[in-house]
Image (tube, rainbow, N blue to C red; front, top):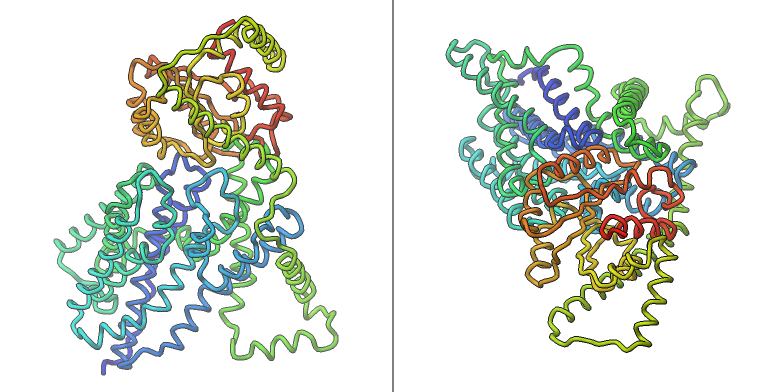
Length: 628
């Protein structure tokens, strides 16, 4: 049996954690700028896998066994208290100030604290990539669930592999085969053009990132690495480490979450970069550990878990109170960063640090001591606020409804669902007309009746009779998301011979195949009106793919975005303006400018149109498409 080795603290890992957490934060705060920041999670996975396995390796060397119960206790103490505090504080806030978020809160709360939130979100149809409809302060908790589930199974796998294979090289190969299998499973389950949340959240499809870090620990144990190495080896390590660091940083800015490449090996390659960076940072003979060691990185790295946990609650709660977020994204981003850091620091100083010295075996005695007389005492200043917060949290969990829709949401939902039927009927009718070769004739009475209907529509929507007559005969294709879907009834009424194809949560990246299907079915007419971009920005390539389907012969109108609570509003609208300069057959319909001073046209979210907004939306379409 080997002598007990003193474990060294690898200071450079705080720098790596800083890179990871900043990537994730800015991905959520500035998704159009740091479009690949979500890859910071891959760094966290690699660090976790390496450190846990390195610790198990050393314990096995020193004692010849793994104390599973001790391992699980340590992991729970590392993950659970911080998570519990954030969950309790957030639930109390929701109960007091933002009760619209109480819906399904019990499921979110307990799945988070019991570490199966990733599967709960998958089962309940949540989307990590929906920038607009996914309003939850706990979306990001999927990550802690994946970590905890790996903690549960990994030490058992470690023992089995060590007993069966014995040699570290063989164990390394076995673990890498398991990681590769997980990555292949991700590629198999991924469906291009559909929401990738299942493969993004799934433990089975993400565990390879952790296991690759674990595999490294078998062939690169921290206590066996020598500080003194040849200069050539040092230069090689530094070069490889810097190269991986630069590539990871570049990926944060250029690797969009909408790229299919990610799921067909991209995440696996990113994990390789993470492992290479990790290998160099933990090596005492390389310089990268020193380069990534400084007071700022130490500060952020030591609080990275708190920063990660607080990011979504701060963003969701803050942005719910700000109705013009898109007008000054930078200012609101700075305010949110300040709030995240403030809460993280307070939690670190007044919760985490005291817990480090707390004897958990005395938990029950400590709790009993709180309630000894006198309860109101200067020695117990936190007791009353703590009980109050816990009480409010309990009330919130008790009253939290399941799948509840409030009156405002219900009206919007009913309007959208009714319009969905109208849109479906529009496509069906257009398809039947396309297949039919018969022509119809009208008598004078029918013509007079139609003229009367045209006059009524002209008055209703504030356009001319001549415009209505042209709209009635026009064959257009309307293609969009839930904003357009909310106007489907009016569009179908004004353009009865046109196709209206709109759907909730429709994304640009998923629209290429849908538009191609319309084209194949001869439902993509010579004039196409597109309303997309609310749910997420688009890449130049995605836009080019759509325009390629349109071809040069079609006239394309793209309705720009009006979503004041969505931080990518300005980015999407600016991109559309630039695209109109690039494509001669593209015209932008300026819904943003047309509606900017008319909050009364919208439901509470400021984006989806109410009945008044529907009338104005249709009028804008008529005025833009048909000149009086």
